Image (cartoon, rainbow, N blue to C red; front, top):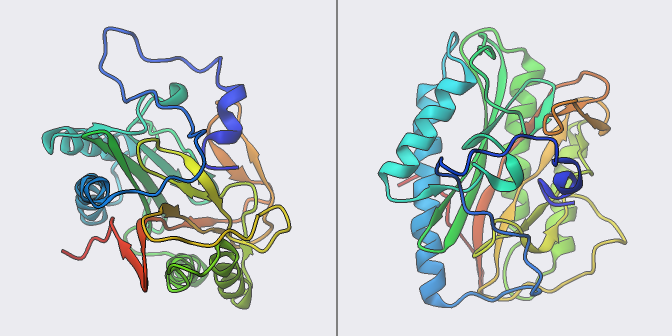
Amino acid sequence: MNLFADLLASTKSVAVASPTLETGPRIQKGRRGVEIKSAREIETMRKASRIVATVLREILELAAPGMSTSDLDRHAERRIREMGATPSFKGYHGFPASICASINNEVVHGIPNSKRVIQAGDLVKIDTGAYFDGYHGDSCVSLCVGEGATDEAQTLCRVAKESLMQGLRQIKAGNTLLDIAGAVQDHVEAHGFAVVEDYTGHGVGRNLHEEPSVFNFRTRDLPNMKLRSGMTLAVEPILNAGSKDCRTLKDRWTVVTVDGSWSAQWEHTIAVTSDGCEILTDRDF
């Protein structure tokens, strides 16, 4: 249920970049259980995550009506490479771009397109990752572009960010994954929105997607795993203004809401500490 994971069996028909082109690392989902990172590994992840945070901070300033999602993708790839990293997403199981760019009722995995032009008032989700010196950073932002965003869209975007922070406040050694899930779910539902249950957060490190799954809602399917210092997680609440139900388009990547309602997502890569967590993809630097 991690992002991308449900698509692995269905992406065979998606064109993979030519072998003559440089693509991102084809790293499989982690199968070694939950990894505890050393101080050295976390320092490397801190550098990878700083690259991601830099790119997203620039995109927040750059995105404007009239730009295409391909414009943002080109900027992200250029900047990731300029900073000595490789885009985590490009070539990952055939994904053709360096960012996922999802607009309005698109939930996740939107493919950048030169014909997909951002309009004033759109709610845009930009998710990206960077692979640096053997480790990944992963983060997503949502933003209402230009003038004209509805009150509901602005509230949805704000509550998505707040729900992420509510989840992060529960993170420290000794607390559990369900503590994160419950905090996110309670905040989302208190504002009348729905948590998307088809996609979850995940461990991150040498692999873009590692164990454990980081749910955003209470479920018996989630072992109530205790958090330990050195765990590195990508926490990413996704919420819809209407129904939680989603479907995947014919491109086999783009996920949209079934009822046409809008969606928002925020994500940070974090490292668990004894008394809290360090937000590795923090953009305030």
